[in-house]
Image (cartoon, rainbow, N blue to C red; front, side):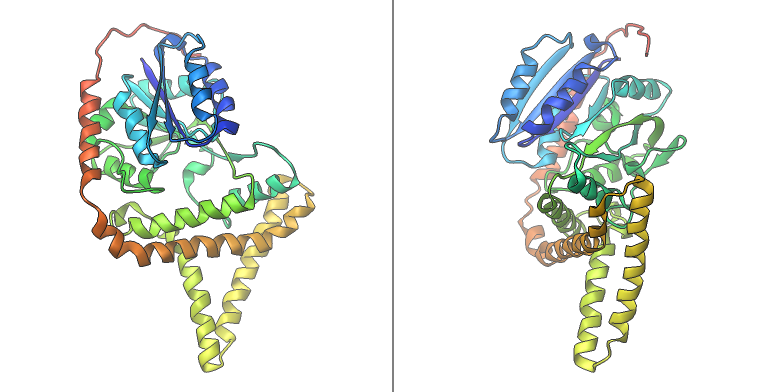
Length: 364
C-alpha cells in the first residue's frame, strides 16, 4: 500500500530536522512512501529545511513541498490531503517524534481491516533540563493538561472519539472531506466528529506510538493553553457536539472563583471560596506528589507545580471566556467558504485516487 506521510510546519526549524530524520529512518519500503510537507508561511529556515529534504535522495516514491498563507493548521492540512495520492494518509505534526516502525505498524493495522488507526501520544522534552522536565510534568498530569485517552499508550486495542497522528484510508476523506478552516485549534475535534457521524471508528493500537515535544517555555505553554481555551469557546457556536464537558472544566473553575469571591465581597461569606480553595489545594497536592512518584524524580523544581497548575487552569479558562464573548461577532463573520473548502478537498481526494497493483512487501 502506498502511504502519504504528511506534516505541516510554521516556524519549526528547531524540531523539523529531527522529524524528517525520523521520516528517513522508517522501515516501511521508501518506494511506497510519498512525503508531503506544508510550510505555513514560516519566517525562519523551515522552508529551506523542507527543500533540502526534498532534494536529497532518500528513495521515497515522491517528496512534495507546498506553501500556505498564514498559519492556520486546518488550511495547511487541507493542502496536504488534497495533494496526497496514497492509499493511506498519515498526519504527523512537525513538533513530534516517531519511531522507525511507525508507518509500518499503521499500515499493518489498516490491512487488518481498520479504517483509521493511531496510538498513544505522550509528551517528551526536546532539550531536557530541570525546568523543561517540570513543564513536561505539568503537561502530562491529568490535573495540568487533559484526560484525553489518545495522550497515553493503550493497553489493548480500543476505539476512541479522537486520534492524534492518525492514519486514514483515503476513502475516509473522500467521504467526509477536509478540515473546517474556520477553526484554529479544534479542527481535529470537528473533523473526527464528522468521521464518527459517517460511521467510521478510530482504533487506538497499543503497538503504535508517537511523541509530542512539550513547550520549552512557560510563556509558550500559557499561550498554547489560552489558545486552546479560546477556540473551545468559539467552537461551541459551530459544532458543540464535537466537544466534551472536560473541555469546559477550566472555564467552570474560573467562574467558580469569580462567583465565590463576589459572594465573599457582597455578602461577607468567605466559606464558599474557602471550600473551593480547600478542594482545589487537595487535588493540587495529590497531583504534585504524583509527579514526583510517576517521574521517579527528585527534581526540586517540581515544587513549583502547585503554582503552575492554577496559572494554567485560569489561563485556559480566560481563553474560553474570551472565546464565548467573541462568539456572536465571530459567527456573523463566517461566509461559508470553509464548507466550500471541505467539499473541494473531498473532490480532490476522489480525483487523486490511483488504482494500482500492490507489491507484496514484508512489514517489519
